[in-house]
Length: 504
Ligand SMILES: Cc1cc2nc3c(=O)[nH]c(=O)nc-3n(C[C@H](O)[C@H](O)[C@H](O)COP(=O)(O)OP(=O)(O)OC[C@H]3O[C@@H](n4cnc5c(N)ncnc54)[C@H](O)[C@@H]3O)c2cc1C
Image (cartoon, rainbow, N blue to C red):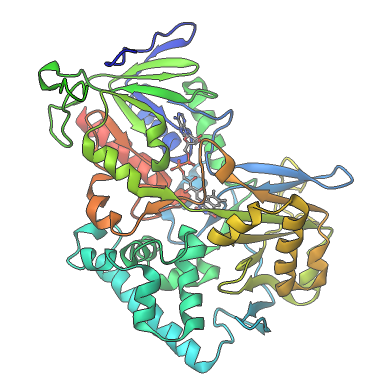
C-alpha cells in the first residue's frame, strides 16, 4: 500500500477545470456557487446524492387509495429574523405562506393533564410561569451580551462552556417543570440532543443566532412561514441557474489541496508534510483536485459545503492540519424524527384547535398544523390550501432512539398515541403516515444539524470558519446568524464565496 496517496486517476470520469470546486449541493454549496458565478468565476458543484437540496427535500407519501400527498422531509420553516433567506426566496420568484395558527393550542403538563390555551403563555402554575420567565430573561441577556459571531471569544465563554445546559438550569431554578419546558427550546427542540450533553454556551449561541432566547420560545416567530412548493425549491431554483455545473451522484472521495513539502515529512509516522493551520504559505491558493465518482475537478479553491460530521468521509492529500482534524471530531449530529400524518381534512380546526400542541419531556414534544398550500407535485392548486390536513410532530434524541428499536407498527402506534394526547382520538387514523429518517442517510447521518460537545465551542469554535489553505468551509452548522437553519446555510455560502473572490 502506498504511504503517500497518489492522485486518483480520472479513468472514465469527466475531467474538468474550474476556478472553484464546490463540494455539496445543499443550500450553502449552491449559494456559494451562484455567488462565485455572478462574480465571473467558473464553478463545478459535486453532489453525492442523486438530487440537490441536502437536508431540504420535497417528498410524497401515498395513501391507501394511491393518492400522493406532499411532505417536506427536511427543513421547511422560515422565521422573520432569517432575512437573507427571505430576500433570496423573493429573488428566486418563490412565494411563502404562513403556518395555520387560529384557535386554541394544547399544553400537556408533566402529570399528563391536557390544558387548552391561547397565545404563547402555557397554562402552567403561577410559580412555574414566573420561573420560566426568569430563566428566559437571563438567557436573553446572555444571548444579547455574547452574540452569535464569536461566542468563543467572550470572557464568559470558558465558564459557560464547562457546564451543561441542564446543570446550569438546575443552578438557576428548582422548578422541574420550568426547567423541562425551557430546556426543550434548545435541547429536543433545536440541537436534538439531551440537555446534559451540550454546554450553556452552545445554548446561548443557538438563542443569539435566532435574535434572542425569547424568539426560540415563540413558535409563532420561529415557525412562521413556509415556501410554496417546499423549501427544496430554493435549491432546485439555484441548481437550475447553475445548469450543467452541478454534477449529481458524485460523492467526493479525495481532495488534494497542497503539494506536500517533503522536507517537513515525518518518516516515523508517515505524515507526508507538516501542514500548519492558518500559516499562509502552507497550502495557499493555487491548486486543488477533487476526485469524485463521476468527475475529477481541478480548481484553485474548494468550498467544502457539507455538514462537519461528514468532513472526515473525504481523504485529504496531504492530511488536514492537526487542529482541523481535531475540531471536526467535536462536532456531532443530533437525532430527531420528523413525523408527517395526513388526514382527509384538518379535523382539529373543526374543534376550534390550532393544531399546536406542546409538552416538555413527552415522547412527541411538539405538534403543528402542517397543511400544504399552493401547487405542488402531489396535489394542491396555486393560491389555495390543500383540502387534506397534515400534522407534523417531532420525536427527539433519546425518544427517537427508543422509537427506532420498535417494529414499524408499534412505532406508528406509539407516536400517534402521543400526538393524540394533544389533538384527540381522530389523530390515530391518518390516511398517510411517514417518518423522516435523515440519520439513516449516508450523506447526512442525523438531524437537524451538528453542534459541539461539552467544552468544544470555546476551545475550537474559532477554527471552524478559518480556511485551510485553498479550502473554505460553508454550512449552516458553522453559521452565526441562522445557525443550524437554511438562512445560515445561505449566508455561509455567500461568505465563503466572497472570501474567495477577495483572495483573487
Ligand atoms: C428533519 C429536518 C428539519 C429541519 N427543519 C428546518 C426548518 O424548519 N427550517 C430551517 O431553516 N432549517 C431546518 N433544518 C435544517 C436545514 O435543513 C439545514 O440547516 C440546511 O439544509 C443546511 O444546508 P447546508 O447546505 O449547510 O447542508 P446540507 O443541506 O446538509 O447539504 C450538504 C450537501 O452535501 C452533500 N454531501 C455530503 N458529503 C458529500 C461528499 N463527500 N461529496 C459530495 N457531496 C456531499 C449532501 O448530500 C448534501 O446535499 C431541518 C433539517 C432537518 C434534517
